[in-house]
Length: 85
Image (tube, one colour):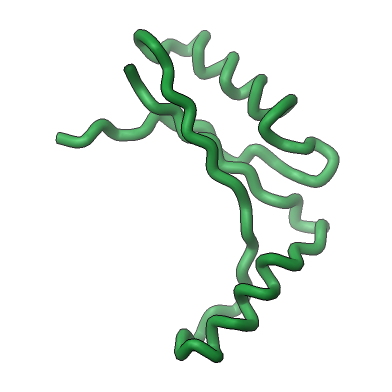
């Protein structure tokens, strides 16, 4: 079994109120120097068997049609997670 990670972020032109709230809270908690925060989503899909190019293509298709809202979000990364040594 392998784990595929899918990262989804709001499109740059879309307002991100959660990111703004986190960005405003950071200085109050002593974390200075952060210019901007954007909050996205991460999905972990555990796959039976080998991860082939075909499997990655199907996961990317699922990410673009189900895991993200293509009107306001971009799928920014689909990768195979490193297994612990």
